[in-house]
Length: 303
Image (cartoon, rainbow, N blue to C red; front, side, top):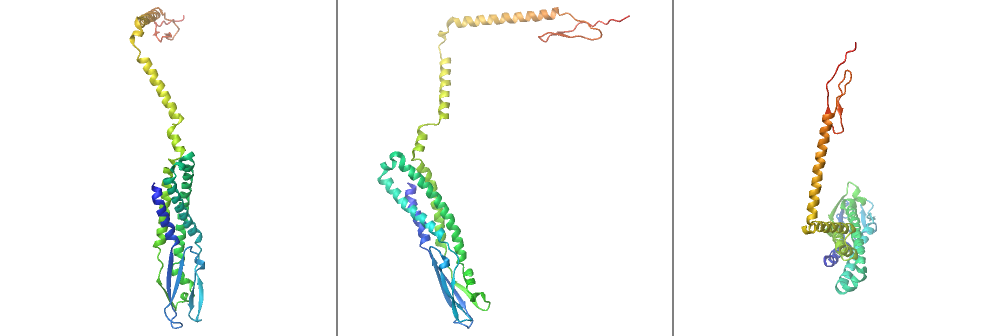
């Protein structure tokens, strides 16, 4: 809805301020007595900014004749591209407004309308950005080419030091600056509208209706663990009966007997382990249970 309201307005502002521009430059040449003083020269230019075709007549003071001077530069490609994108975006915005209001059912049928709208919105976003950048660069070059200092250098009489030349009126660039600003505003507006158009497609609706496999597997595993824990811990104690208590008592008695048997074995190993003798060294006898005994040391002298 935001694009439907503002897109036609900003598109009109963009191509109208560029396509309807008219610039005027006026310079004055003083020949110092050779010709009538204060000769004014009017230079007009505008869209599509083919400045190499703009010409004017300038006086040649000593020769008492006039010369034809042309401006330099052709910036029609960037200007026409910018205006074409603006007009196309304006017409498509009007068409989209009519479809949204009067043909909503046909627009949503078979998901063709949202998909076409989605790709067209992406296309206009890129073209607005590209055309705005090109037009901003060309606008800088136009200002340089139509600068009064550069224009006066094209006149042969103004290159002589004894003659005086000056600019009496310069072109206003505020309108062209506004067109470049509106171009970038349109690029931002159409780029932001991509998300809202994407929400109307089946790609977004399918993702919301059917979750991903990883999330579904995680939920199913969590559900199994929850059901298993509830089934294992929430059973009544009567189902086990006295059998559970008897088995626990028997296992505990077997464990006590095993502990007593192990302790008696360890005591017997400690009590009946005999020392070993060796000439000149002490021997430590160790069992597997890490209990070591040390006997007396006997020294034998050889005769």
